[in-house]
Length: 182
Image 1 (cartoon, helix red, strand yellow):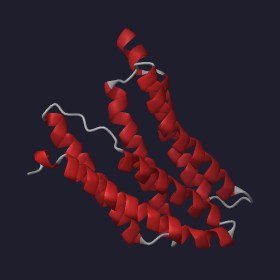
Image 2 (spheres, one colour):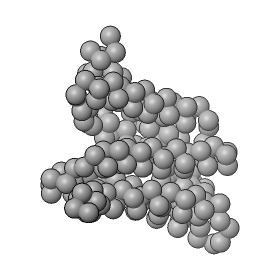
Image 3 (cartoon, helix red, strand yellow):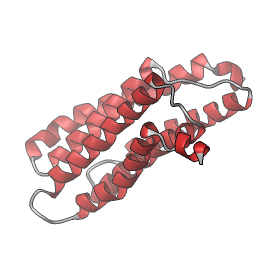
């Protein structure tokens, strides 16, 4: 019971909450009531905020757990993949953008797995954090562009920034940790 209590700390509860928000966001994106896109954006913003918050709390309170190490990156990937997949299905986003984002995620997840087998934890880098920020901004602006079409024109800029930081962060991780793949 003590182990369960330790695993279900506040950071992990926030991560689970983020996972539970994923279908809510998806439903809101497909809903047809007046403010559904704004509600989806708000739910997405809350989910994205918990990503930052859970990590900060875990490190500050020394509450990093194996469950958190598993669920946090899984929640992040599920959130982004779900939203981007819906956007591709709606025609809001080109599939090749999602392929680049997913390709980078699978590549770096594989790299982390290889490093972990050798006892090395690959922490996020400034480029990785930039990638997350630009992807979150891209998704938020694409969501906002649905009810407010003029905002959608700015989305192309953020799609470009997200693609650039996604590629650069992937290259940065590969360069930093090339010893695990060479």
